[in-house]
Length: 452
Image (cartoon, rainbow, N blue to C red):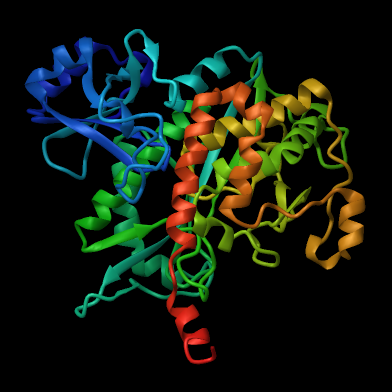
């Protein structure tokens, strides 16, 4: 199924469902803890569902956690419902499960978008910008399986970028790519990554909303295809202290009248003044937005110095230790491919919040002409701390708790997402932090039980 989203109509959906003998429709949403959830309706209900949507408990979007526990202090409770209204442009026939289609929904209370649903909020924000953005996502992941004893293990081990890794997983990756293309989602690049058993699929650039939608379908496709082989993909940022972390690098460019506004052929790095100001805005607000882009307690075990994941708020040409990498453009296509790569993101992030927050911070930089300072031409960890302080290359928040404290007092993020969403998000992540922090680990018992 490869329909142009702009050409999808309710009549075409009904016709396609009947022609393909589709039985089930999944109505998908992604909550603030980045769990893909939804409702399933029988296909015979499609016309009524398109008109009126389905219902859902109001608490589910922000007051229900990845742990499947109600968040302490949430403003939502057992009373109240939202309507799940499908966006027909996201209609897809799912190739990895029988007789099933899906759509992504937005949540409404009456005629108003639910105040903690970021998708309609982001859509409204983007509609009021004079700029257009293109977003390319690079998800990294490990392919895992369970051994006969029930232990989780790597499906295979390979060297970085090696053909041995390509050959071993080729049948699976090929099936994934074909399933994505069936849904109108296209891959730019694939390779076995640095970690043994780690891989990366780079998705072709799209508009911000569609890039986020595609990532939801990407995750679902990985789960569906690999599951048929007794495998699964984990996007966990740091699955082991011995393995490299997995990020979700975001490539971004800004456009107007089909012109890449980040490109300037006269600049040493081919960047326009708007691009530099965009960088300045992101760096200024990075400590506020990182709670959205690295949204789990595990995220901060990846964002460490000397790990090629970035740990300091700086930018640099082709610098994989910087928060923002000025990517080398394609030779002969510099005007089209000049872009910035955001390194401080992983797949625990709600994609609408991560993409939208980066854009908002960058646009603030453009509006205020924020100077990003000098580029970092080396590993920022190699500088003395006082030299980094002079250049304002500050260290990221080092825990989720530190990050949500910065987010909680962010004026810009509250302007973009609203007080309710930010406040509920902070409660949600504080709940995760508490569940993690107050547990006694095996390491603590090993180190301290006998010693004290």
